[in-house]
Amino acid sequence: MKNLGEHAIVIGASMGGLLAARALADFYTTVTVLERDAFPAPDTPRKGVPQGRHTHGLLARGSAVLEEFFPGYNDEVVAQSGGLLGDVANDVTWIGRNVTLANGKSNLIGLLASRPVLEGHLRRRLLGLPNVRAVENCGVLGLAIDPARKSVTGVRARVEGKPEETVDADLVVDATGRGSTSAAWLEEIGYQAPASEKVEIGIGYMTRTYRRRPTDLDGKLGIVVAGSGPNWRNGVMLAQERDSWTVSAGGFLGDDAPDDDQGFLAYLATLPTMEIHDVVARAEPLTDYKRYRYVSSLRRRYEKLARFPEHYLVFGDAMCSFNPVYGQGMTVAAQEALTLQQCLRAGSNDLARRFFRAAAKIVDIPWGIAVGNDLRHPQVKGARPPMLRFINWYIGKLHRAATRDSTLSTAFLKVVNLMMPPVSLLSPAIAWRIWQGNWRSALPAPSPAIEAATPKNSSS
Image (cartoon, rainbow, N blue to C red; front, side):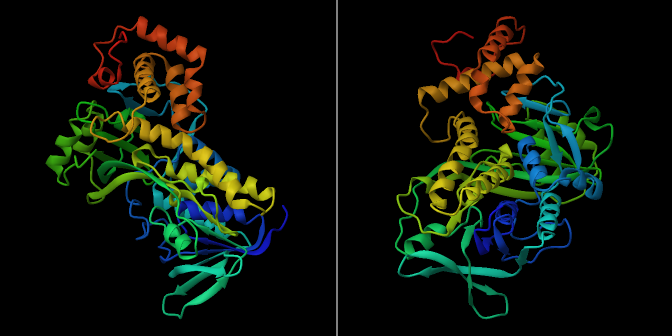
């Protein structure tokens, strides 16, 4: 790898920031990660990750990328912290459109562990690199600028208990997440803020951890219920380290799950399966209830800006944050880190334009998946062009056929896990299986979700 500079700074030590720093470490003499939090005791939640106590999933694509950056990472999480590796298509039950997809063996291997464990192992592996360091309790107050060129030369930062100082850098990466202040910083130095897209979803979910027994779910590692009509409630139960389950349930637009035992169980009973309810009803609680609210999916269109300062990038959730129920955030950050690495191989000239355009292509797919599915809910506001209506109708047909066809289930889950593009589901071979599955199906009448998504002039 060629050296592109003496010093790179990453603002933020969450999953996105750690992955960005890993990509930079191959090209800069020193990489410094500035984090406003203090790092916690190993593998425990921290204040700066408010969703850290809730259910997380590292999709198969994310697991593969982390393994590429840090060989042995997955096995290390399993061996040292009790994480679990499993076949996403065979070891987890998937329910969407109110039907259960057929299980089948696949090459989709996912890593099950809590967010603190995933992040803790990643941070330790990163800081084990000889040219990477982290500064805790460090707030970044703004950018340092070359007034003549209006390019970024570093950051203005203050470590707790110390005076403000300017830290020089050849490249600064904002990985501060959804609350990023990059737009304001750009305007302060005479640049335009990016346009943004927002989809109000009002997602709220309640999470609790329970003792896991080997006989729960007949030995499967999890169950995922995607929200569909009539009540649009979602639920997930995933195996975690130390023989535990993490259970989350919630709904759109203020339809929150209660934080008491009777109310939570009643809420779980409204899902299209009783499997999560039945495990929770007899399981030993290990934590209190924790609530998390997520108002809107947000995408900032940095790739559309005509001008952007040199030596500065925005990364991860600071560019785009999705409805968290789809579990895409960590995997998208991992893909962006790979893309950043590829852009750096071509040098630092015009880096921002090249990276933002490449990252936008990565974001397009999960953004389309999340927003397109959320717009099935009749009360979520947003444009529903004919192609989106067709795709949602088509995916409904796929779900019906996939109740008996594990090949279709796996094809769908490859898209969900960001291993294949959505267009792969439109291939002639897949379309033929969907047609056969619906033609021969002996299932009951379509669910309200499928009826709602079916064009009026289409046959069922």
